[in-house]
Image (tube, one colour):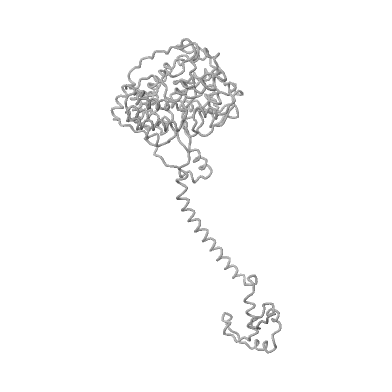
Length: 532
């Protein structure tokens, strides 16, 4: 082995020699005077002793004093904490830049999912001004004066529609076209009877009654899917076994579509599901509590559209299936795709609560029935058997409501809708003008399109465009917004813009037949605007 100098002896040798100091070294150590231990270099220590002390200083950390270890641990912890804080700050800045635009770019259903998972994300929702969304270029003073005069006069009773013995079943193309535009009274399926009854057949309504609830299969709705789901629940009463997706695929191929109208739901029954089951459907406006009770007591499932208010979202439209009533407690029993069905017994609601939301949609209702029930249904409907008469009943009720309360925004809107169904577009437009002088709910034109029809048919194109723009600012998922805007551009001869808008409507709902047909008529030069 190579020799090593004694000054660089291995650690083991030094440790072994700790006990081998010479007698002279020990004697010298004893004679060292006391000195400040913090300045060992001032002490004249023999060489052997100094080496021994150096070995002690080089001992492992485990042999050092506790306060030294604590200092090291505190320092290390502080360093780690500082690093983590810096990382958190940088990460926070990055997230603050990236997350908001990412979250707002999501479709509404995904925003809702993430909001439920991480509550802080709810604050990132785009803030919208929802007050007085719909502004028209009208003189409010003139509108008030003219609309007051409108409801002060009597309206003529409409001519009853002729009806056939058999319910006409439209072709699928005809149904699709009728299902996606604002109907008039002539578009509403007539009651399947030879002549409409002037009044309802006298019938003693039981104090309590329900459908055969065991025949119904409740289903919880998917996103924005109360219409297809409620219709599906109602059809299970007749043996329908498909879930809500089949109806949704026909009625709203885009899951984000915010609305399915009653005429669309009727078209689905009469052209798709109904022929398989032997079931028909019709809808009317102007219903009332007594009519609902008569229908339920005679085994007819009835769907109503009503306004609801959700704490986190505000006012919106919603469908519910009426399955029973209790005249003693004055309650309706519902199978509701959102709120539930009370384990099959029917969820109870006070009549005032249901009827106030119901009137916000002009008391519209859908009836499902089998062909052999046609005559009975017509008798039970009475004057409502005729669609024009039903619209007139709704109009008279709404006019009476605004006479009693001129500030009733729902009643004024219903006046406009009823006039639209009766094709009296001038008076409809005037009633809508009055309704829009009030603070209408910002989702109103997600569900009800009468104002578009009335203003378009009276040549008030700028008002159609103003309503469409206001609606688009609150949601892009209403194909009617682009359809009616396209009609205006087509009427103005702006072909390219019209086609672009029709394409937008089709992109949101590929089954939206009116936009498809309107686009084709423009391309072929067949489009004609209403005379106004």
